[in-house]
Amino acid sequence: MVAEANDIKLNKEKYEKAAYILKAVAHPTRLAIIQLLDIQDNLTVNEICETLNCEQSLISHHLINMKLRGILKSHKDGLNVYYSLKEREITKLLSCIENCECNM
Amino acid sequence: MVAEANDIKLNKEKYEKAAYILKAVAHPTRLAIIQLLDIQDNLTVNEICETLNCEQSLISHHLINMKLRGILKSHKDGLNVYYSLKEREITKLLSCIENCECNM
DNA sequence: GCACTATATGAAAACATTAACATATATTTG
DNA sequence: CAAATATATGTTAATGTTTTCATATAGTGC
Image 1 (cartoon, rainbow over the protein chains, first blue to last red):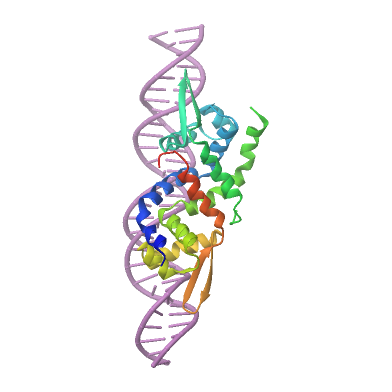
Image 2: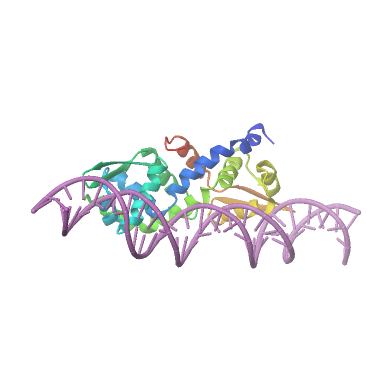
């Protein structure tokens, strides 16, 4: 076994963190939210709900989840809360998957 | 709303497929398997178990799962089954996540 | 064919995520 | 301050994933 392969198990924490972020992205609705915010930054919860045709509290849960994981950020203005991508890098995951010839 | 944003909901199937692949990757052990096979192609189930210090049947479930989703391929030689990456592209997901400043 | 090894399979238990619903909170406006 | 609106929160039910364990299958060498 090469030296590098031995190190794999030592990176346990690294894989746990990466899986934690990937899990936040690995959901159709959350992927749609990410793509939507990539096209049009700074949308309110309602705008996202309407565009994705999805219930408010469900979208809210998804948004808060992604914010917690550092993928999104938000700011409040009056009644509205505007969400946007905190990590634009994250959109590359989608293109990466699209370039992939696995069972898509 | 810009035209593109309207298309988002039409891509439902695209997001479902992408999420399906991302889910297969979003697990610490499966990430470790992918990285291991990136470093050292064509490993037996046992070699993977030993390197990752993980039970045989659990690794087998993970491998079969990833094979099913087109991420891995395998060939049998005698008693051994050798697994390798079918989609090297998939390793880019990890580097993508690593470049990301989200809560890793 | 028997013992051995490597891998796969199946089912159940343990655990985690998602969706749905009801309701709370905060802000604005009249 | 009451009504209306936007968003968040909490709880539960439904669903899905992961782990474990027991066992099956398939190949090798005697």
